[in-house]
Length: 110
Image (cartoon, rainbow, N blue to C red; front, side, top):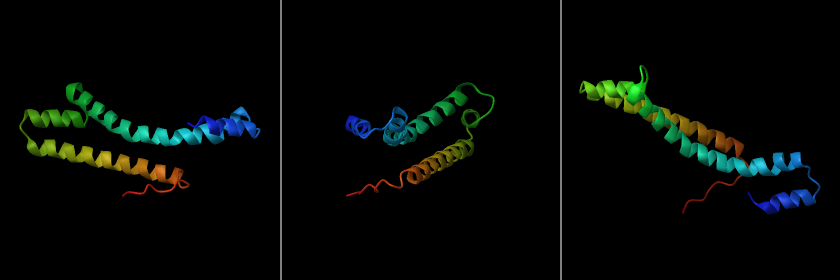
C-alpha cells in the first residue's frame, strides 16, 4: 500500500475509520484476490492429498481405490471432477474480482 495515499487522506482530514475503509481496504483487495487465486489451488491439492492418504470419503479416496484396483476410468473421472471444480472456483473468483474492480482498467496484453 502506498503510504502517500494514507498521508494525503490524513492531510485532507480523514479519520482513522475513513482511512481504513476508503484507502487501506481498497488497496489491499487486489492483493487479497491475487492470494485467493494462488491459495485455492494449494488448498485443493492439500485436501485431495489428505483424502488420498487417509479418508473414508472424498475424491482422494476415489483416486486411491481406483489406483489400487487398476481402474483407469475411475482415476480419470476423479481428475475430470477435480478439473471442473478448479475451473468453476477460478471462474467464480474471476467473476467476483471483475465485479469488485469495475473501476480498474483492464490489463493490456501485448
